[in-house]
Length: 377
Image 1 (tube, rainbow, N blue to C red):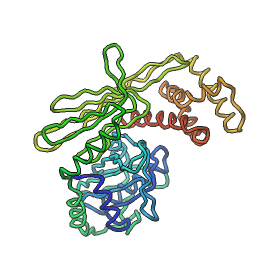
Image 2: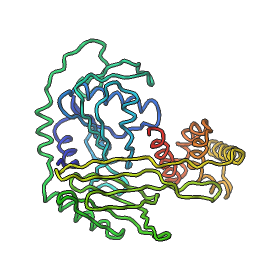
Image 3: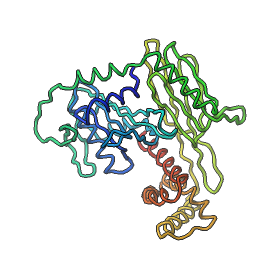
Image 4: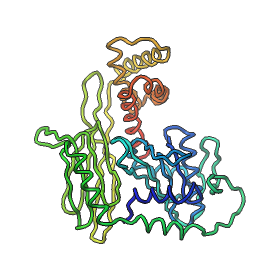
């Protein structure tokens, strides 16, 4: 089993970006340009490495390889995005890797690209790239190729050696468990060993509602691979496990005018096998709340007025300040109730919410996260 933190260190230490790995300060697939560039890199790395894994490491300064981290990204549906835009797509996995020196809400993103041995191309137009385009790596660049090209297998032995040196051992596992238990001891930290091999650690603030146990400020990690499976400072989560599996159900708090409810968002089930393998299955459970259209029109217009005042730098009233806190979730609800233009308004609000306060910007990112899960399911 590969220790993903060690793998990232070996990739960064090996040499600069090349035909089997890329590094990014951040990615943003919330808009067409960012989505197109991400798909281009996936396509190029897959085509340039038909017989070995390739990688994208996210949260790295380009000039000095400094590990700065990015926000936790729990888009389990990223394969759906790949399948929607690429023909003969590779198998792509995005994982969140914690590093001890980073803040709790930051990780390093690791994208693993497993080729299928076939040529990958864009399925349809996106941004300035045309459907049918084929990309390859040319050194550290992802470039389009409009002619037949012979791909030589020059990376398999290098990647095999890097992955071999990143194999986990009992010392790394024990150090990971002790580190988690010590740093999370204020949040009801626990661990469990599955199939005498896998170690899962989790922590969160416990809350009992009508005999049901929920957790907030949740952190869940698979220690063997140094992968953070779940992290949230906002949502409520239920946790259930037996000797063979570990299940997480995530809830989101949504509503209008102070009348909020918790809705199931997604179930994640980790199944552990006797042969030292595991599988992660995710299932969207979200049933968007529906509201009276007349009420929504009124609230939607009020949000638009607040956004216009933010754009003009005008002061908000005390009531508008409270409404601003709810603005990302309200635009989300409007969009889920077929106010299609609400998504444009939400994207339009991004820079103003980011400049206004860290708390409101985190609520904006939370709304986008929910939308992303729903969109690609």
